[in-house]
Image 1: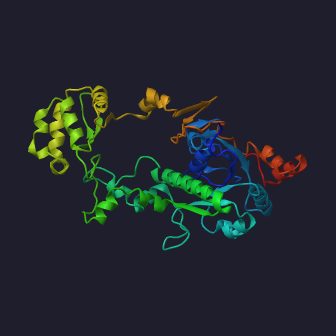
Image 2: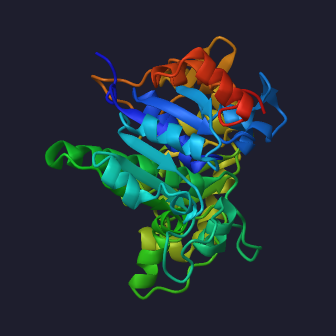
Length: 393
């Protein structure tokens, strides 16, 4: 059947996380992605240990299904090669500091004149203008400034960064959405456009339900640990073994919970009659439920509950998740030779994702890509020797 983006060529100038995460997903769904690294390489190649084939696992997790080339875009010869690559490209993804491409004479305005069908996606920290426009962006800073840290952490404790680069990854997903929207619109208009995904915007867009609560006149959001600000019971609970997470969203689910746990006295307690009552007596409800749950094996009662229609699951470690049979069943493990990776979460029934190549070594496909531009062996050798298109760091 092929993949959804077969025939789409993506030139990836991005580094680190948001951009590479975006382009890996595009590559998983069939796009021909050419990853162009600076002469020093994508810095995440060195973000280890652990290392696999000389590159850090961090890099390995974001760069499969790409062909590798290195270009020194600070030099005119490197920019000329980029322009040749863009002649038959559909998408350009970059995360240079605002103004860098313009300084080099290859900003959006010029590229749009040269390649009117090109979709130019920029991933940035704060966008190009405004009070913070053009400033560099980092995931942890976006978590801090976007409000995420203010609501993450234990009640009464310090603000905490979410334990993964959430804003970078969501910004990458927003970039994918913007690119695919622009590709769809181009099918009608025949013209490309500028797409921007900013970490600051993405962080703010994640602040649900906290911003809606503020819009409705609610109190300033605060840290509640694992508890939900609007729902109870909705947090981690101890059992006789491992901890479980209960996420009970309505009265019917609460009744099923009490039935499975054989605790009608909790169901009949006026303090826990509906969600508003339960939220107002969250501590008492937690104590009552944990007194019952300590009789049960965590993984066993979690499965009984979810099969009964009560949202519940054991709190698993990374290793336990990777060993879970449903992880393999859902195609979330990818193995190609020595490469192991996480599968794409976007599943298409008729045109599924495909995993065709492991992350490239530095400039691994230089000769192949440059030959495709019509360069001969002597020209490629000269570019390598001059450092315009190096093949080693």
